[in-house]
Amino acid sequence: MSERPRVLSVRMTDSLAADLAVLQRGGLDASAVVRHAVRIVAQGQRTAERLAAAETGRRRPAALTIPTGALYAPRPPYDGPEQGV
Image (cartoon, rainbow, N blue to C red; front, side):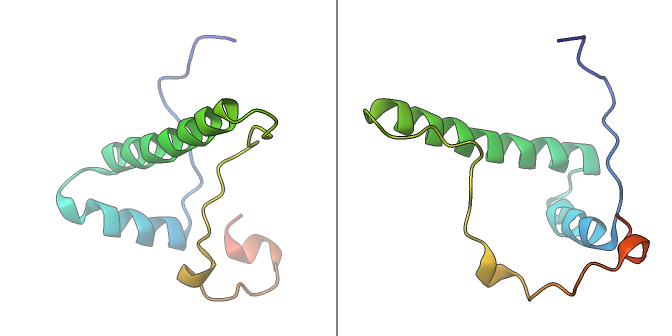
């Protein structure tokens, strides 16, 4: 693997901006809240992998899945660039 990048670029969407605003209420800047959020998800993934490894025959999770369906309204059908993707 090559040297890690010093800067990470993420496409800014209205929903990401709104989520960042919520997380920044504690006084952190955008970079700090992104690092914090990634750290939380990574810790959950590590825990899931460790638990799977401890249980013989249990499949290692490909990615951490957190049931969040109740947090979000149904998404409209994809309409391309209008969604800022």
